[in-house]
Image (tube, rainbow, N blue to C red; front, side, top):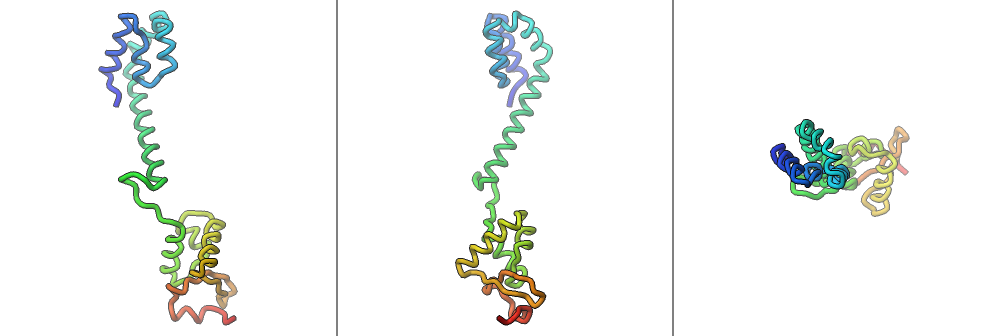
Length: 163
């Protein structure tokens, strides 16, 4: 974390001809190079920094916190890191939905439960169908559903049309 004392220490170096170190310290590389080449904008920039350094340090700290939070979320999203919860695959999501619904899963149920779009849910249900894990059945209401026989309740067999 950036320190105000350290920033002022770097600022103080400008009195000895090395202007702009405080800018490098705060992550402002462009203006740091400019200060180095122009002796702190001919002293005006150095004088400006004398009064605005506390705000610049606060801004740098916020920027560092934001970057750390974004990095943590990116690591968590990818599934790495020690603190990250393991992400559930869509296949596990479908199995969980089917078990909860007595062996029946629809693209809408999977999409709602997993916060994914229905096309993606249907695509994964079709993959389970091609692997022989699921089958398509027609309910007496005419609705097409994906059934995972491993989770099928015995009393739900009467809900399907005999083909």
